[in-house]
Image (tube, rainbow, N blue to C red; front, side, top):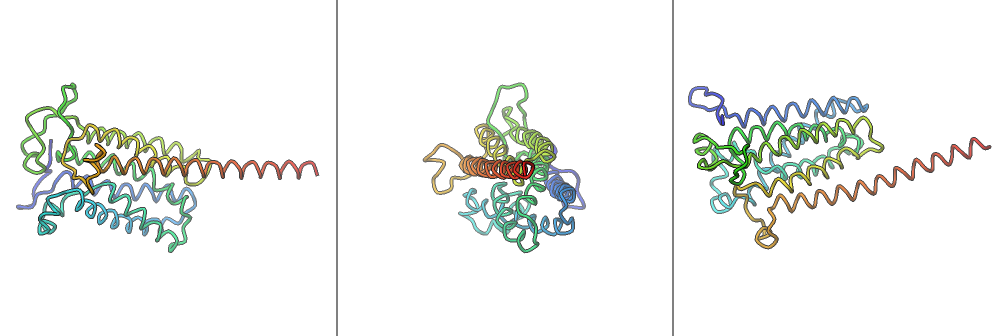
Length: 277
């Protein structure tokens, strides 16, 4: 793997950080273009996206405090370079961004579901790129495997993240990267054909929740145990969040789909009545 791109003097430019920055930038531009296609003001979407970026960074760090025992036991490590350079926990960033968007979308006078639909494929695109950075760094590694696509990480990766180097591991970073790329393509297809606003973002929640739940079975990096949930359920924190995200997304899809169908049926009935008159 290539955890470090180059150095500027003694300062290392890490592959993970570079790809994460590229993921945020491309996702924001991508979301703005989709929003403009839907008739939303591009400038407002850029403003919203920058606030969501800040919220995602803070949220990912905040959840990291609960999932990483090292930081709870040694609060001084919160000021360390490793903590500042780490990407944090994705779900923490996603949930914080959703909460922030709920507040700011009203302030910016943007339609909630239509705006969320514009951001959905961009989120998946950002994940696809960002997880490539995880692979380059060696973080978020998988369990040992005898499969032919198992990956042995380098000593450089071990020094930065602690990834084992003795045996081939499941490349869980690539599993999620490829899954996010396929989800992104599907959401782009769906965005042009959606029946109701909110359909794209809710499909993202359902598909990513399901994919992440499965991928977590192959991960082997230490991820903490919030409130003892892992020890009691046998599921990781991310799997529990994935189940909640999946269930909520499917439930809302069902509700909004029924509303959209009822609206179409009423409109058809009115048209038929008018035609007869």
